[in-house]
Image (cartoon, rainbow, N blue to C red; front, side, top):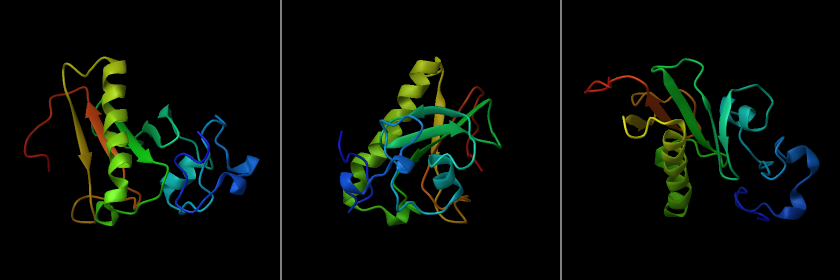
Length: 145
């Protein structure tokens, strides 16, 4: 797992104990941005974390829009969907797969759920660190907003 999920350019030799999550299997990039989500990833502010692997952290939204509202955040800081490159395809896929796994594990995958990425101000993005919203536990309306 050495070096997996690190910000491009980081090497194992650049990791110190202070850069590890409480679950030390998952290194936290030292060059992470200073967004709210970066602070949650670094455990500088608390969150109700429901999922973590070396690439993704998921936690309950503090302003839920449904009975289940979880944010899936890549540990690699990327401001908006507009900043994605082809090299990020696997990481974005990991966000989606983590959300689907969570839905199955929590027992609402068959009933249904919604996943949403917001991009930029008009798209409803308020934290400039990409994240996937998973909403469940109620009937979703269309159009959404």
